Length: 463
Ligand SMILES: C=C(O[C@H]1C=CC=C(C(=O)O)[C@@H]1O)C(=O)O
Ligand SMILES: [Mg+2]
Image (cartoon, rainbow, N blue to C red; front, side):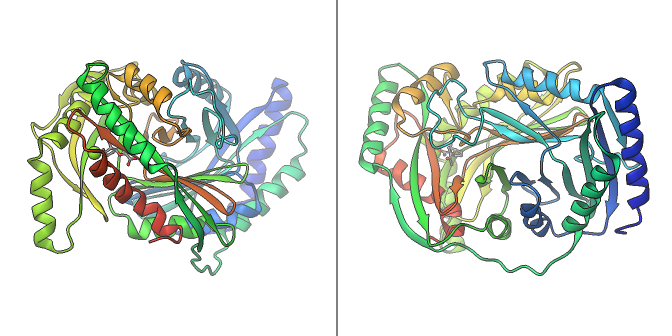
C-alpha cells in the first residue's frame, strides 16, 4: 500500500499551504491512511532518526497501540488549572484544522499523547528537567493499530511562508523511513550498578505515617521509594518496550521521550477511559505476590481477598472514585466486592467502575476529578498530596501521574504511570510506592515495593 498515496498527500499539503496563505496564519493539516500491518516497536525505533521525541502507548488488553514520532503541536500547561488549559488549547487547535480522514477510527488523525506530573506544586525539577509539568504531544507521524488494522496519520502545522516542495519532500521521505520494515534484534541493557535510595529512612517514614494516621492527620497515604541503576551502555528503548509488552500481562505499556530522556513503564492501573461517552475507571489497590505453584497462588489470592488491611487500602479508592464519577455521570455501576487482578509478579484487588458521562464533560474533566486517587495519593486527597510533598524525599515527577491519549472524537484513555522508570542515557531511576494505612507494617510494605520494582528492573538487566 506504500507509495499509492504519495501524489494525493502532496496535493493536500499544497491546498493547506494555499489556505494558510489566504488566511495569513498557520493551518493544521491531518492526513489519515490505512497501511500494511506494522510492527509498532520497529516503527518506534525507526523514529529515532527523525526526531528525539517519540511516544508509545499500548492498552492493557493489547488491542490498541499508538506510536508517535515528532511533534506537529505541543500542548503545555503549568498551573492548578492545567487540565482545563490543555482542553482549551486542544479546542483551539481543532478549530483551524484541515482533516483528510475517510475511516474515522479512534486514535487516528488529530491525537494528543502525553502526561501530567503527579504534583504540579512540586518545585524541585531534578531529575525531571526534560519533562514539563504537562506535556501532550500531537505527533507529526502517528501509527495506530486497532482491531488488527494499521493506520498512519501525518500531522503538520503549515505556515504561509512554507515551501511546498520542501515540506512534501520531507514528509514523504520520513513516511518512507518509518514504513520500511527492518530486521531488528532485541537488546536489553546490562546493569553496572544498582542501589536503593535510603531504604531504612523510607521504612521509618512508613512507620511515622502509620502514627500520623492513628493521630488523625490523614487516613491513608501512598509513599514511594526509588532504586537507581546504571548500565554498561545507553539503553535501547524499543527493546525495553517490546520485552515489557511480551512479559507484562494486563498492563499498559508506555514511553514518552523528551529531549533524549525517556519515561517508560508497564502499569496495570487505568485511570479513565472514554469511548462514545461510556466511561470506565478502575480501582486497583491492595497487593500480594503471585504464588510459585497454582495452589500457592490461589492461597495468596484468598489471603489478599480476606485481609482487612488490604481491603481497607482498596476501599478508600472505591469510595473516592465513586464520588468523583457520580459528580459527572449517570448509570454508575460498581460491584459490591473486588476481584483478583493477576500480574506477572503480583496480584491486586480490582474493582471496575462503569458509567455514562454526562453531556458537557470531557475526559480531561474526569481526569482532573480523579487525580490522584487514593491508590497514588491517599485520603483525603489534598492533605495526602501535601503530606507526600513534605515527607517524601524523592521527586515523583511524572511517576504516579496520568499518562495517556485523547483524540478529536472525544475518545481517549489515561492510566497512572506506576511500575515505571526515568531513563537517562546509561542511567535510570525506578519508582514504586505502596498504600500506607493504620495497620501497615514497614517491613511488609518494603517487600511489597520490591516486588513492584521487578517488572522494570527485569527489562533493565536486573533480576
Ligand atoms: C503506587 C503503586 O501501586 C499502587 C497501585 C496498586 C496497588 C497499590 C498497593 O497495594 O499499595 C498501590 O496503591 C506503585 O506500584 O508504585
Ligand atoms: Mg499495598
